[in-house]
Image (cartoon, rainbow, N blue to C red; front, side):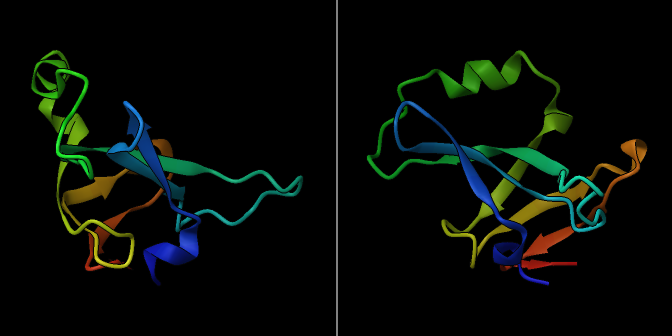
Length: 104
């Protein structure tokens, strides 16, 4: 399955600075009432198309557990690779990998 098939959206701050993504949980079908579960992750390396970040991202990250940030390679949903795996299994959701835009 491709990430683009999971209705991905950028999490952005300061205009276009993309600091993470949300996407439909690959494990969960739409509910009876059409509700959908979305997962979200934040990047260690934000995508900064303007070559500036208006927030103090490194200090923000220091205030939060390291386990809540993912390293990323790629700047589009089609290219995105994140590490480590995305693990929402404690909440009954998907645990898997995003590699070069592929969800497994």
